[in-house]
Image 1 (cartoon, rainbow, N blue to C red):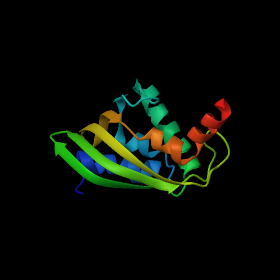
Image 2 (image 1 turned 90 degrees about the vertical axis):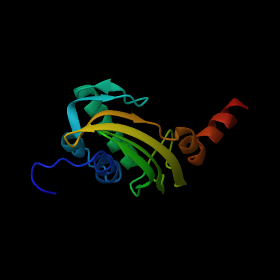
Image 3 (image 1 turned 30 degrees about the vertical axis):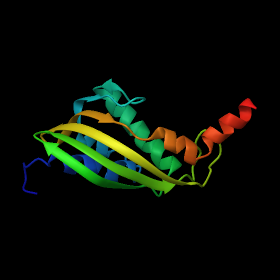
Length: 148
């Protein structure tokens, strides 16, 4: 990419998934998230430095739980500075998650929407299938057993 040329919205989104969440490299946030970024995803919501700190923490937590995580973007639409993407996150839950590691295979759907300006995410909405994650790691089953 020529110097001074910003990456497109899909490329930026893929960078934070592949170079951040999949590897545990939270420093990618400083490269691809604007200083005044607004994060709308439940559990990470915030603006500016709060949002960036929340995303960095999420990168570390997700990677600690599934260090072999692989993201696949299956469909994406880019209109102007906005990207909508549907994909999958797959890995093995070898790290703790609401209890000891389950070592379960994880296959979780993702829906992402990001507005990217000058190669940096300025606004993001994410909808990972957390229910699938809870079910696949056995958390839901443990909750059900504890009620009986």
